Length: 374
Image (cartoon, one colour):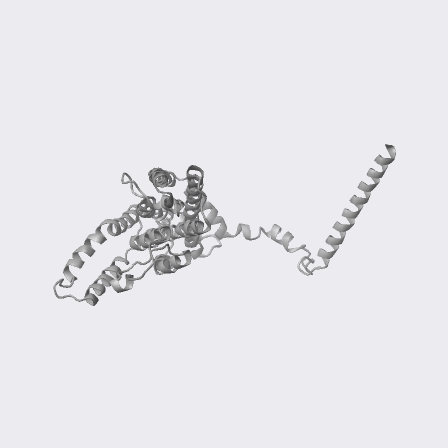
């Protein structure tokens, strides 16, 4: 017994010695590498040591501003209220969609296709669907996070104090945008994965790879859509001195595109519609394309077309079709890649609107005088 214990102790000693020699070899190899070699004249050690001494990239002014803005957003009451409203409405619409899906699965076994995606589009008529709620309430979240981004700092007198620091002027505006968009992205990513998990647990059907990709694309389109309203509200906060004015301006644009734009298009369509008795097929198709082009000037239409196509694979076209074009077509779901190609113009339009608003606010902010409370 004593001999076995002595052998075990001896083997442990050999293992420790081997590990120690291996560690010394690795340390010597690292010291010979140029990246980790001490710089001549400075004597301040490796790049990691120098980064630790100077604070490194973690303490850059832009990152400090982003962390501060994210903290302010998460702790604010308006974000909590908007988050609560969106969560309650989305959970209510999802519960009605799940009831409709369960009834459809019990009556028809062929309804098992794209079940997870149907949670976002189905409704029993008592409440709007999930994408309808997001299309209607999402702009309010973007406007609520950005309507006082710059003018509140100016009115409180903190803008000139921030600009007195060794900081580029555009870093403040970039930090405001990045922080708000990060909060929106985290919120909808968590909401999307939560819905996917609840659907898997309650319905007992896991999502397929195509459903997962369509779901991720849907979330990114939501982020682009709300990002446009966020940049529009930041533009108004740069342009107008009072936060109430910028908030009312953003809400006015939202109301115009949500309710009045379709009414105006209906009036315009009655005025330019071709005569039904003498119009040819080319005239009718041209009129429909013209009205479709006008309706796509609205960000709500771009969002609605993009999300509906991604969440409903049965949608194969977004424009008018003649009988010759439809003849012979097979009614089957569109692959994910083809759906993405179909909505690419709508996605590009949303990104372009977002960049235009950001560029306008950027130019206005860089040209403004910052002195005291002016």
